Amino acid sequence: RSTERNLLDADALERHLAGIRPQLAKLLDFTEGPLQAELVDNRDWTDGISVLEFLRDVGKHVTVNQMLAKDSVKSRVQSEHGISFTEFSYQLLQANDFLTLYRSEDCELQVAGTDQWGNITAGIDLVRRVEGASLHGLTTPLIVRSDGKKFGKSVGGAIWLSAEQTSPYAFYQYWMQIPDDDVEALLLRLTWLDIEVIDAIVSEHFAQPHRREGQRRLAHELTSLVHDEQAARSAAIASEVLFGGDPAGLDRDTLGMLAVELETTNVTVDELADGLDAADTFVRAGLARSKGEVRKNASGFRVNGQPCDLAEPLDRNALLDGAAILLSHGKRQHRLVVLRDGITVG
Image (cartoon, rainbow, N blue to C red; front, side, top):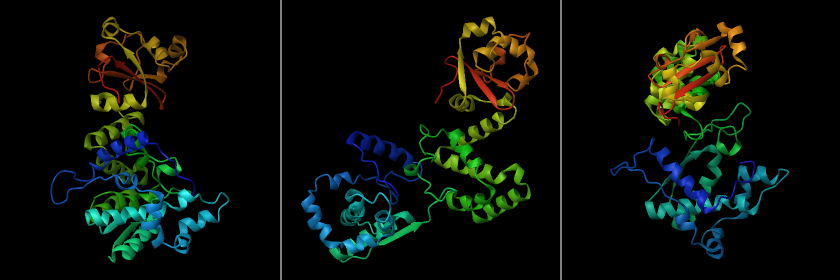
């Protein structure tokens, strides 16, 4: 980190803990068995430790020279804003976590990104001094943004695993926008695909880069992993539709996804039974300022991907999968007219 971390209250910590487990459950197995994963909370062993106990049991085994030698600390000490004692002490807290988990869970390996190397080695050294045991650390290179900053929530601009923070569609779209030169490395590092399969995908991608097959496969694999196969499929279909594809076959799952991304207008069964004036509906949805504008530029307005016939009212026959109508103006402006209770948004 290049800045101070936020100090969270107990309620915020509880919310974070509750949110982390279901995300991990998509990647790890928490059911009983030989590979059962366990989620623990370091508050269970740190809340009851006094400052004096911590200094006696942990602090005395670590020299300030060792702590200052860590690259992450050294860069902060030399920066304009320096480093607080709280931030400076963080490596001791993480080292104590490793010691505690070694004692209680026989934990011998800590895995993290390379930015945690100093904290991991602090724990390895602490356990060696206190218990005489040899533990291990495994780090992987961080995925960094084009500006070289860490790809993570602490530096802003990141995507989230939570669908509430980053929708499956937005998650899918993020990977679709990855530069061509990054596709192979990300397929290798972030997916379970065999290397031979990735080689074939990359060869096909660079043979016709305009088709973005590498990004499509990357987006599909990661959206399936983080969300599920249905979310990946719906995101792909929604993406195609919003970029000019045919919406005729949209199902409710995909319409529900689009309802999160697009501005929506609710209509009732009775309104559809009477028939909605097409020009008025475009105005109501915010795609035109007046009915006159719609009539004047009728060729630029579309209903479910087809040129709009302003003489025909919009009724239940216009609903996609009995749930919604997709209105478009030009290539990039879209709105969804949703039958109330027809689809679930979010």
